[in-house]
Length: 88
Image 1 (tube, rainbow, N blue to C red):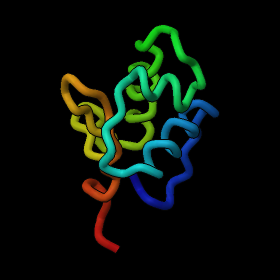
Image 2 (spheres, rainbow, N blue to C red; image 1 turned 30 degrees about the vertical axis):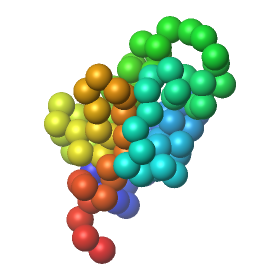
Image 3 (cartoon, rainbow, N blue to C red; image 1 turned 120 degrees about the horizontal axis):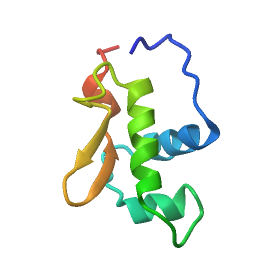
Image 4 (cartoon, one colour; image 1 turned 180 degrees about the vertical axis):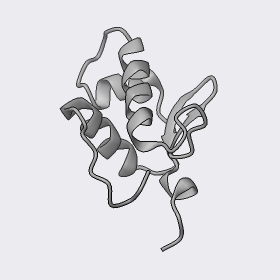
């Protein structure tokens, strides 16, 4: 994804991306994201999975092989934005 390309994000996608970007390399479970981004202390955690998938479709060059929003198997998700970005 070109750095100068404008992204059309929903409010929740923006909130999720902003939350992760502010904490690069830190892993969050779906339950933690549901609580800290959505403000819910209960609910369907698949909501997080769906939003991560949709966000990847918008920010990843290859959403099937993400480099910015990484899955940490058995744990959750983390932001590794610099991994896929060209050097400045």
